[in-house]
Image 1 (cartoon, rainbow, N blue to C red):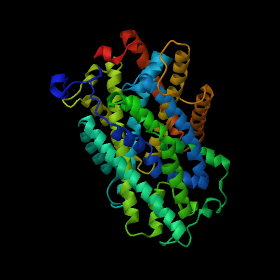
Image 2 (image 1 turned 90 degrees about the vertical axis):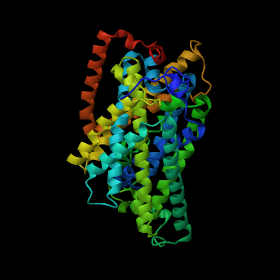
Image 3 (image 1 turned 120 degrees about the vertical axis):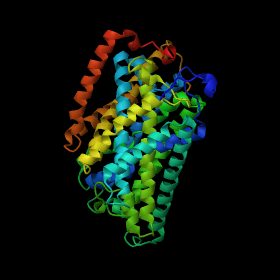
Image 4 (image 1 turned 60 degrees about the horizontal axis):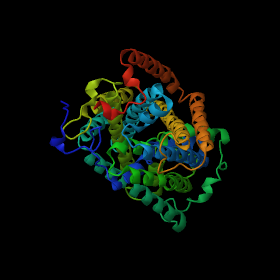
Length: 476
């Protein structure tokens, strides 16, 4: 049972939200890195390669530039006012009460759906060793284990994510080094055929045309979901003014290495035409190399990546749902913290809804991942758009002297944020064009109706809960 805690019970909480700032620089850095390495790369890239070939590398590079623009905009907002539930807070302050309400609930849905995707992916990876185990059963076990882990203190969460991310980073660096060794020294079963010429042979760099490459942007953008998670950790970071900008500034290097670099190596080892949708290209490539147990090791790593992302999702949904409750925009019982200052009630509700992913794995196991990721991507687009729009309004406010200037400024003028917003709109259009992902557009009208009706009811019953000037700590 969730209980409201006192400072004497677990030590002082340095902010009004009730959380402990227990995430240090080491943990924030690795959480940021881990957010850039997930299922979208390890599993989703297989489908994208089959659709676009080597030109997928270009899609990841272009999308990576847009993500960096978004994250620098977020960094400017975070140094202005670092709070848990930051995206909704900034949308509420700079775009209005409905934007804040919609962003908070949509980001919560975003991670609930992403949690479904990650448990689905983890269940797919387990089939590598145990093909006879039902996919839904494995997804359920993972969901329950991670739920239990998220009821522990934020320090433990940070430490778990640190080691999850360490496994992913070490493994990808190792895979890149092995791949470079195969390409330069010619060892392994693939040594005679591995070559960088695979990037432009076998139909050229755009074997299925530029249009097919553009269509992969929706898959690529899902691979980047989670990079904004550092914004949710702001309320529990020991020194957010220093650790968050540092984590954001290293993003280009992470994208260049873990996405572009890794894909260049993989596509050089094996011709793009040999990769299959729904199969991790990393597992397939290292299975062909013939290194003993390599495919099994890589599969373990991608399993770790999926569980890491799901773990982060539970962390994020719990904080965002509690932030909504603190404002009176969700049931008041969800404001409770347990004895370790974790939002146990909010995490429990989020986890129960993530269980819908288990049902999908039971009903349509072969399409579950694609259905879920398309909905998650649309929710992510809204969140990223809200970040960009909020930063544009904030910059106008501090340049006119109405608000203090940030200590960490996003480079470029508003034109860079405008281009990034246009890119997000393009991705949304592509989702509607592609028949395989169009299902998300069938879900969103229902979600939009929920937001409009919920906002109208709340506005009538408790107008103060929608006050754009209200701070969460005022209600705690």
